Length: 226
Image (cartoon, rainbow, N blue to C red; front, side, top):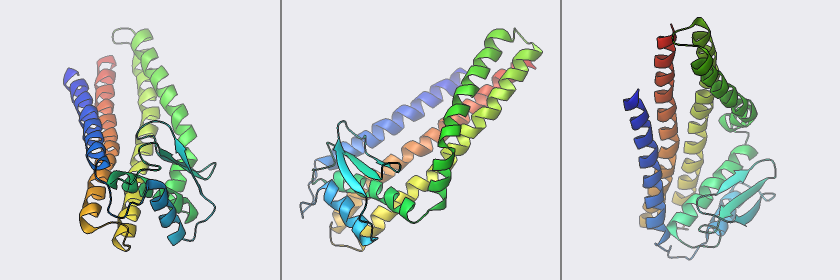
């Protein structure tokens, strides 16, 4: 039990440190053409004939995202008007999400359809598991049943995370392919973009790994109530 907790903590921290270090490193590398993040995102959108997506700055660091409800790409202060290699990569990744919606990319539509139910499942799962531990007694049947139900709802969270993986990898792939077919960045600069996007993608892989470890932990707890 303690090993699973420690391993989950190490995976989460390692993934966050890696993405922040990669972003920080390539945030100090300016691209030769002086293309800003917002300009790069707009270029990718125009290549796909998309003209109705707005691009706006937002405060914070690594807070970049595409909002499908408002049809707006929001880029952080380290990306929007910065001409670093990291800024271009992150901005084009978010533009890749906008293209996914414009082209009805199946995984992103599925993720968007289940996000609300997943949030509800996550909350119910937590409540059931806590209730099973607190009110189930030492090895009571009630505790076993509540935790089992909690695990079932938790599986919905894992499913959502698995659906997220192809969405994120596809968005990064679109960004990389767009750079390869254009003259925005040099080959060396493109390599920096790939490193930043790979580091970011690994955070999603880490999230799945941590959830699977959490699932093992929950199964162990349930076993004690059997």
